[in-house]
Length: 107
Image 1 (cartoon, rainbow, N blue to C red):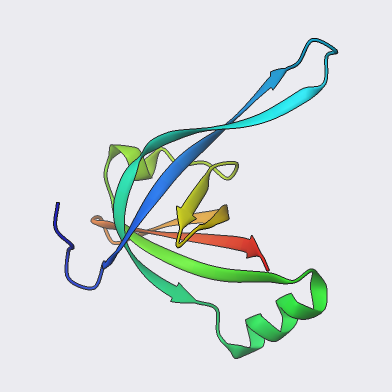
Image 2 (image 1 turned 90 degrees about the vertical axis):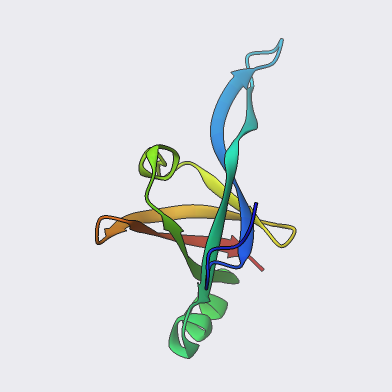
């Protein structure tokens, strides 16, 4: 697999699932859906300052190619990138060939 121009970060896309333990407590689990090349853009200075004030979160936009996998992503899914888990907070189609995934991680 090779990078696609500015999409130089290989990310793992994961789907949220909940199961129950023997006591009926919900257990959070994640399943790998696949990997995609992404261009990563971190939030601007204002966003970083606001996030730090709120809960120590950092925002980033992951630009990926539009395909069956990326079009099927949901808000409860996440991105694993650079050793961190990024919770997807929005998905936005950009033209017909791209999707922007806005995600947040706790810092």
